[in-house]
Structure formats: C-alpha cells, structure tokens
Length: 218
Ligand code: AP5
Image 1 (cartoon, rainbow, N blue to C red):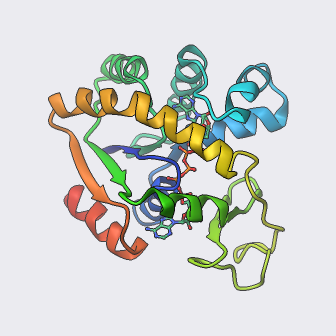
Image 2: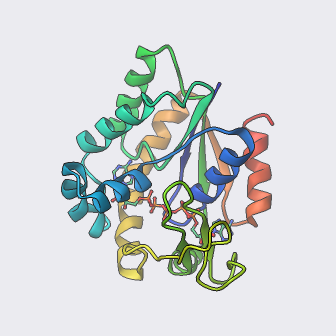
C-alpha cells in the first residue's frame, strides 16, 4: 500500500506528477480541486457553497473539504493506496485526515512538497495551462511546455480543451497568498512525523518524476 500526499503552490506540478504516478502505479488521484470543480459544475449543495471561495482564489472551508475527502476515500478503489493532490491544505485538514486513516488502521507514507523558486514561472505555467474537461480524462497541457498534437484538442479523445476560470494572474496572486499563509504549518506538521520529501518543481517534468520515484523508493 502506498498513500501519498502531493503539496505545492499553484502550478508547481502536483497534478502533472499525480497523473504520471496514477498511470504507472494504478493508484487513484484524489484531487480536491477536481472534486470541487465537479461539484460546482453539477450544481450540488457543496458546489454552490464552494464556488464563491474558489472564484476568489480562497481556500474552501475545512468542514466542506474534509467531508468530501472522507466520502471519497470510502469509494473502495483505495485498497492499494491513493494520491492526495491538493489535500490537506490546513493543519485542521491534516489532523482530520490522520483521524480518518487511523480509524481504518491506515497512514500516510510520504508527503511530497513541490517547490518552484522563481514564481514568475508559475504565472507562465498557470496562464498557459489547458485541460481536457471529459470525465475520466482530465489530461493537462501547456501552450508551450506540453502542447497537444492538434491545437486546442485533447490527444486522448479529441475533446476541446478548456482553461480554468481561476487561472488568471489576479487569481493566481490570491491562490499563492493562501498557500503561503497555510502550507508552512501543514509542512511542519508532517515534518514532525518525518514524512516530508522536497521536490524541485523547477526542473523538467521527467526529471521531477525521477525525484518522485526516488522519494517513494521506486
Ligand atoms: P487546485 O485545483 O488544487 O489548484 P492549485 O492548488 O492552485 O494547483 P494547480 O492545479 O493550479 O497546480 P498543479 O500543481 O496541479 O499544476 P499542474 O501540474 O496542473 O485547487 C483549486 C481551488 O480549489 C483552490 O484555490 C481552492 O479554492 C479549492 N481547494 C482545492 N483543494 C482545497 C483544499 N484542500 N482546501 C480548501 N480549498 C481547496 O501544472 C500547471 C501547468 O504547468 C500545466 O500546464 C503543466 O503542463 C505545466 N507543468 C507542470 N510541471 C511542469 C514542469 N516541471 N515544467 C514545466 N511545466 C510544467
């Protein structure tokens, strides 16, 4: 069993690396951002409550996100492990996750923290990102770093690619502010448990994936 947490500022490469891990190790990628966007699109109660926070680049309140993750972890596809992408983001979320896992005699094995020193790069990555909206696909592209074979179309299924509404310079600033306010305490929480591995997210995605595999002993 391999239970991983991927942390890092917006555009650090959490989703990109999670998709690679999922493809190689067949572990489900549980992205709280993706789950919240799906809830928003479906117009569920959770989605309606979360929308205002997400649209403003703010963290969605803990109680909403924790309940959503608890439900997701019970889906039955996590027997071999899971990759949490973008959760936990506050100490309250980290503590709730520990309690959830303890109930099932499970634990987190590694917390991979992706960092990109030059934040100008994050702007470039975020504003150039396009992704496939098709359920079950979600492939991520970049206009220059990882362009699709046919412009504007997903390589896997030909679906028209979309940009996220929070992928603007103004909202990125707010999202980074939230990360800087809350992430250090979460990283400190996992450091005391000896689980943190730093990843240099500045490097080419293949090189970053090499670091990821080394960190998880593969
Ligand atoms: P979420 O969807 O999690 O967004 P985020 O954390 O801002 O992260 P991103 O998805 O933007 O970045 P990423 O690191 O995955 O980058 P990617 O690999 O795609 O959250 C959205 C919102 O939901 C939050 O603002 C909040 O409101 C809410 N939310 C979510 N979780 C929450 C929680 N736990 N609690 C409360 N609220 C929550 O890469 C980006 C681009 O760069 C791509 O185009 C990619 O191709 C490219 N790229 C990736 N790696 C590299 C590389 N090494 N070199 C060059 N290009 C690269």
